[in-house]
Image (tube, rainbow, N blue to C red; front, side, top):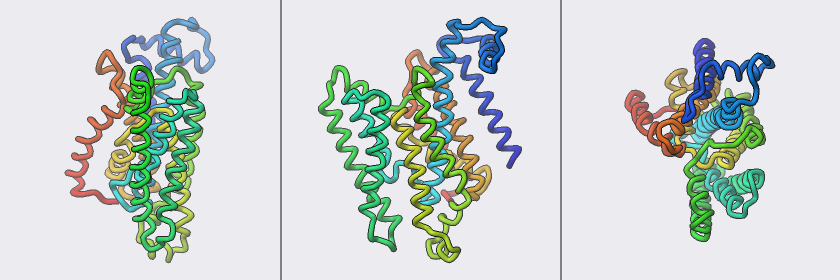
Length: 332
């Protein structure tokens, strides 16, 4: 397992370096090596060139963002599938994605800027989670089922609010921006735009990683888990809260990105089995690799950038069908 993880992390690093030189403006390996040396303090190369500006302000920020978005969505997807004992569970199962999308679009409509979008996305994302929990409250015997049903109701509610915003938005200016943003993109104009989001994604991912072995117990039957002396409600709240934190920051920065949280945990289980202590670390690195690859395709397949969610679905759906075929059904 250690050798496999080391290979995947080295592959991710190599893929990130390769991505720095690929795009509509080709950058030579010599210039990339020069940039890397400058990054580590060497001054043998010329500073301030066009290539350096492209790498530092355009490609490096979106590659870094892709790495953290991928690892966050991979970990949150694996967490949700174990918490809800459902191989089809995704990070948006509780309506968090719809709530966070509504908050971000509202911030975009009101012109609140990047920090305003993150704040409104965070607020409405956790509001959606709170409403789903409120609906499920009092149904101890069927708490998980009621939580999912509450999430479906909350998701439909915020989707209607989102449609209302699109209906009233200026069709010449705001509506195209909202539509493009909802399709998902890793396009940013500098590292300064992603620091706050990366901190939030890291916080949620670290919590899931540190307690990943507890997910094995949560995947058991509730009575069996209680017999082991585990506080089910406490750990469920921990994993749901950490996953929600990841999702709202991803949505606020990148829009809607599907399939990562569903597909990546299944690939991880094919490689290492069902032990979540191994599935979570593997989902982290596989999610990062998947998102960097998807972003590389998004900005190189055509003259115009292809939205990330379109490519993730085009790649993810056939691959998921393949996983179903070789796995003979989905198992946790």
